[in-house]
Figure 1 (cartoon, rainbow, N blue to C red):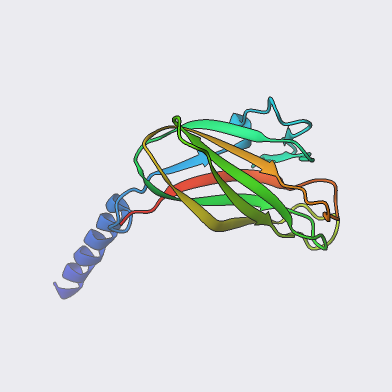
Figure 2 (cartoon, rainbow, N blue to C red):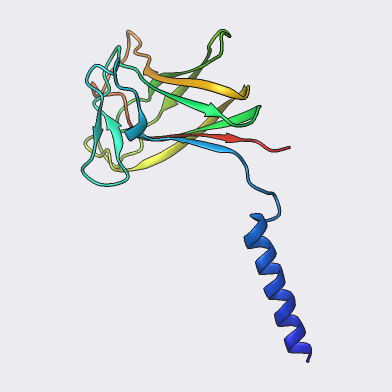
Length: 171
């Protein structure tokens, strides 16, 4: 009887976690993927489809990629940039511009540090998670562009971008 009661309690706890997402409820997240990107101002950026998950590659100076999405809920969103960059290269710097309604754009600077094992290795991805912003509910345009400094050295390409996730931070 005691074993059956313990089994039922464990099963009930497992079911509760599965149904509620560890008790925290669902958090709003928006995932921006290469296939959904606007490449009109991309100047050579392409969706690389050799194997899934796909990425955006071929980034050079003066190229920008954008997405337009609907923000489901106002709040502070953590911005997670999944990218790769060859090893042995200096960090590349970028601008992530958040344009919403008729407000002044929010421009966030970020660094894409080397992730690969060596100079030719673009295969290792990481997530840059050191930025975020308050967003209002409604239409949002996210624009990513490299920021080339006059002292920039290394590969001519900016980064390979696999995704950008905007994750609502629940209180």
